[in-house]
Length: 336
Image (cartoon, rainbow, N blue to C red; front, top):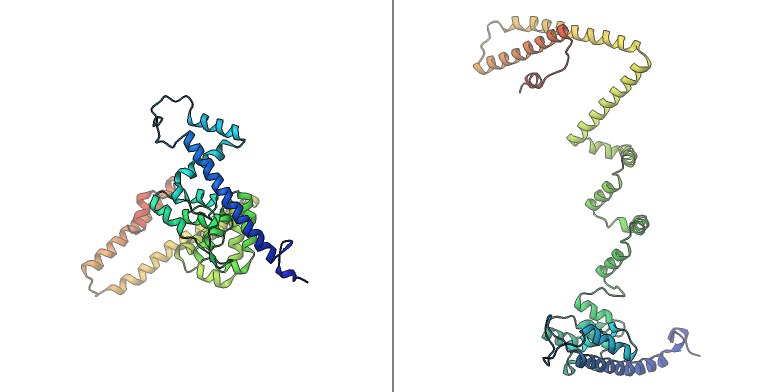
């Protein structure tokens, strides 16, 4: 009894080999027939340069398309088929046609621009690892001319096939979701690509908020993130803004809070003035007998100017109720 593993489809391997041999003979006959049909189409309408006239110098009674359409109709095929025959036959003169190679492979290799390269290409059949022999297949020819193959084998070919199948955003989203659930896939994604993906996925503020909250709950992540000056500044700013928002809500709900804050702020202001005067009263007497360089004296004068500006601003604010800082005063208080 024949082993099941020694069968191909519904036939034995021996019968399969017989069928392949017979099919190759038929394919060779088909190729010769297709080339013959292409030669006929060329005889009816020779290839000519764009804008060229009829080779015999006569006026055109029919356009090329009309002539080929008539021929196609009369033999019962599509005009496009006739055009393929004609083009391929023109690219492969009779002496250059390779016996045993299908018309399909000839048609694909016909796109090789240089004649010499085309002649050389068809003589160099690629190795077929399945059969262990050098032989032409349509995909093998497509690889030579850089066309997309029907059965991708290499990583690049498979990536291109996936890219073609995922041009639709909905399909791409489902495929990406499925792939990212596979640990062996995600571990091959570079850190830079992971950052880019996370950035794209967190453009929505709600999503970004949830992701950030979850990430900062991881001590190691939070600690390293806070080492960045910009991040730390923004976090501090956010905390300050949140405090202001909370205080504003409390003020709206409890008007008495504002009166309490006023008292606290007033006491802070008076206390700051008193503390400054007291500090000067303690330090200035201790400077008796000390020598100062010109740079040191200039530094003290500059700081004294800032103190006077701040005091003038305070007095003016109390008199006219204007408590905002103008740009010039801000720069002065910053020492700029």
